[in-house]
Length: 174
Image (cartoon, rainbow, N blue to C red; front, top):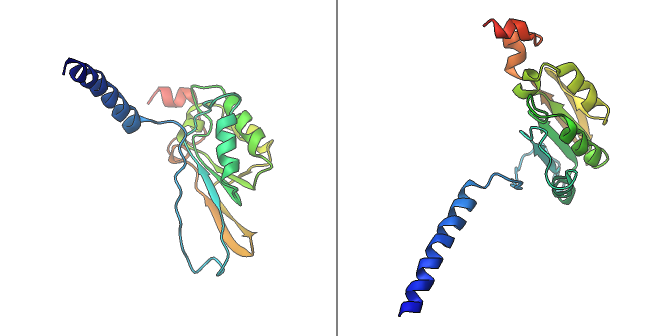
């Protein structure tokens, strides 16, 4: 009976830790969604990887785990939906990621607020272009993937409209 209580006392904290970790885990996860539409040819599909809010964080050794997860999805298209770079973190993590995925599929990018907050938006955009990424700035492109005609659109982050081009002194005085 004493051994049973000892195990229960040990098991309860372990269960609590596991539940807490699983509830608040914010690491690399893959969520898969299937969207059916008449706009995609019957018998055809388009696999899209959408990445957002990476904030230049380096996952594992030189972005290896993140790059592997992207490649495992076998995407036809990669969309970068803002905050791929960050205002408080060096762009090195973004460079590693883009170098690792640049030949996987066509990549389209739109800015997020953290790119604008960095005060180096022009440098960030130049860096991203070096990897063959198409930057969409309040515009769209028409592309063909697997015999399907698609429209990819990108709207700049609202901070561009709010502040114009980033000017630290202007923002500081607000």
